[in-house]
Length: 473
Image 1 (cartoon, one colour):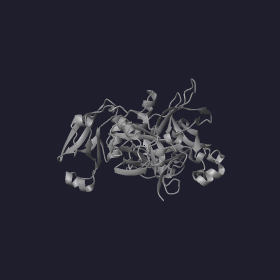
Image 2 (cartoon, helix red, strand yellow):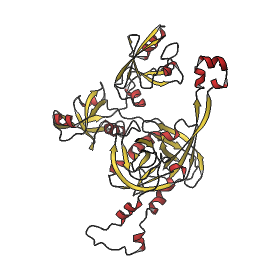
Image 3 (cartoon, helix red, strand yellow):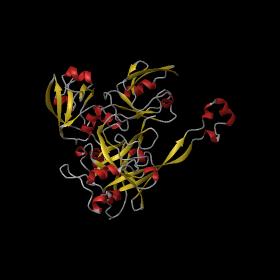
Image 4 (cartoon, one colour):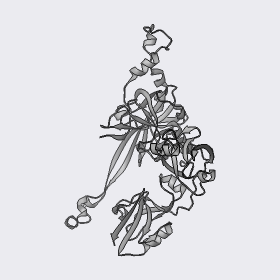
């Protein structure tokens, strides 16, 4: 069974890379290597430079386990009693192992968000085996990146420089460095086998460098390094049938890492530019009808009012082909190109309109919180009790990675074992109606659930579906 798994790194395939390093120019006559140095071409100098900046990341989290399911049965509740130990939630410690990369010599480290998610303690072990307690500076689940900081005093740690990942090409030699299976730091070699992979369901902002360098579990957060000793990306996941390496690994590009690092150093959360337009991929059939030579790009199907896209003149039906000269293949690629642009910049958007090509200048702004979020925890005797909700706005939609139109009231989180959880309410659900009352603001929702009812009729938008639910009170 095929699956995409969080990743790690393990060894394979230096022979091909060595052959490339030793290969003479096409014009040169083939000859047996004349010196031992020519035979012993090695990655060792590069590894000596890069490996000290790759660290191990250990995290520990407290996992709360619900009471025994036996206590859900009234017979067993009467037999054991409500105060039985079976009825008390239990806790256990869960450990996680991954890798990280030092990006600043004062102890700033980038790793994957899933390595440290919900961690109570984070420990970083340097390549020289020293261990430090780490502080979480910023966690960005949408990109699956997290920034940590360790206190090394006045010492300057080895750090990797970020490569411009837009300069990386298919066929470039790369090294993957990390801690696969917890066996210790390991280096493997390979090539960049593909770019701009967006059909991998790992993060909200999907745009990955693909490599065949052997990667295995435990290498999450490790470094993908180019031959100039710079960081091309953060290794994040593998495509696997068995959990081990099949030669298809995915890394978050360094340009996205740079955006998250910059936000962390500014002391805030990641703020992404707002385009205010959505669309769908251009298929072969659509390409023919639009007068395009080949499928590709994003056909715009929605433009938000007062958005940068509307201000720039983008219309429904336009086909976005490129951002600042970089081709856009699908909506994932469009989201990445916008997300890696700085707020306040002007993006050059190449489009096709009525079979004619033109460009628009889009001034990218911060998504506004309009209307105000009015975040609230719903309480009381009704099916939505335990849900935390807010008014949808471009800002809220960006924070939670909401893909639909940013209007209405959205569920941000659902408390465990609450009525909302039992009735299947999920984060990112939009509450459309309660007992026939249309819900457009949190205030309207709170008023609707405050009225007792023998039967509750809910209408919930989940993605493209509208779900109608009837619950007896």
